[in-house]
Length: 279
Image (cartoon, rainbow, N blue to C red; front, side, top):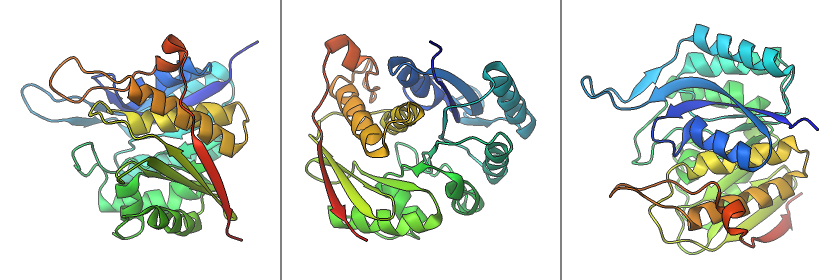
């Protein structure tokens, strides 16, 4: 039996903890065949000190063509760091051209240390062009706040209202991640009628580099398997929680999550899932 085909369109993170590297590791662990479109290379040049090296539109188009021709069609796709308005517009165009369904948009706007990764015109393109064609968007609290014009999110109720309001941008599902809240790690999913809340134990660690990439990649793999959306998120939440629980670091810098943790330790975290009808 041939594996399902999943594509990630994101930045290349030289350290291996995030971006396409984290996505491919996640896809492999979850049994889908992963492909990549590199939008930018994230690595600090020792002489110029530049940190993000954008790929050309021509290179992005060529990668799309190569990937699709290799596998004929896609069962799922996710986007990560898209970097610019022009790349966002081109990726949206290619989604339509290749008739790609089950697209998960991780709206990467802010880096680990709160550095802004998208300019204002790119954020407008994200909201007006890419999000409306998404099966799901997965903003963290900072990204949700930006998409909502700077609204502060401080409580679980704030997450719920943010998910409801962000749904109006056009994505079929909105998952707002509450990683910055105090207490348990709570995320909220909304699809227009029901709020689904996922609660996991909060793990005290700094080794969470690439956690958002990994989470959205796991959701993408599960959706490609045609799991019900609430189950796809549940399994992904368990996967990333276990990966965070076994995160590690080789240096004094925050390290990655351990993508192989579920398999290696035969372990998964129980997630508390509750639902609340809105409409």
